[in-house]
Amino acid sequence: MIQLCYVDGKFTGPEGASLPLSDLIIQRGVGVFEAFASFGGKPLMLTPHMERFIASAKSSSISNIPDVEFMKSIVREGIARVGKDVRIRTFLTGGDYFDEEKGCFPEPRFFVIFDDVGLISNEMREKGVILEPVSFGRDNPEVKSVDYRATYKMPREAYDILYCPNGEITECGHSNFFLVKDGKIITAPLSRVLKGTTRSAVIELAKQEGYTVEERCPLWSELTGASETFITGSMKLIVPAVKIGGISIADGKPGKVTRRLIELYTKYLERWLE
Image (cartoon, rainbow, N blue to C red; front, side):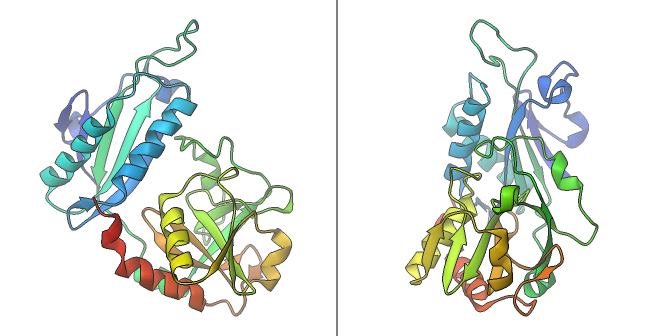
């Protein structure tokens, strides 16, 4: 449930928030966003999220982006106004037109939605989730676009889709993907996937713990030999994936590497709070 919005330069309840029908986020789907949560009143990885937000906007030809410190101040003020932990979603739209001469969307709209956190349940984290493979990849993986249509086309029991173009595994619709095989943790390189903030933290923790991390695309053919797989994201944190399509991963239960990384991430979560 939406608790608070920031739009048109002011904070308002959801009933007072709106965008004009002329905005290209509505007419053409031109827009970028970030989604993350607060813990104990502090946003998780605010700086990396804002850096990625700006990079996505620039890659989408959106110009005149608000100052990063201003956007951070809006996030912090919104959390304080709500008075409890929330999910924060920041947006930059395409505005009302594309400037052909300058080759950009020169008048974007910046708005923020603060709503209930909605973290994944402990039961799902303990039992693991199912992923639904698709044979294509995501367009412009370096951009966190508002276009998430592909993620709605999956069986009811699946938690997320898994992009598997040409026999390679890149990422999920809402998450980064990791495969553990022969004691090594394998995940796709940043040239192929969105730069996940939790992905970066997990790689840091894994290396700190002595695990070998290979940044390459896991192959579909490696699933049957994998000891475990898991996904990461700002809202879900770390979640075991125990079945992919019709393939059960190992014994179909969360593995020890995943459980250890969940333990470490929980222990050091405060490291990334701002």
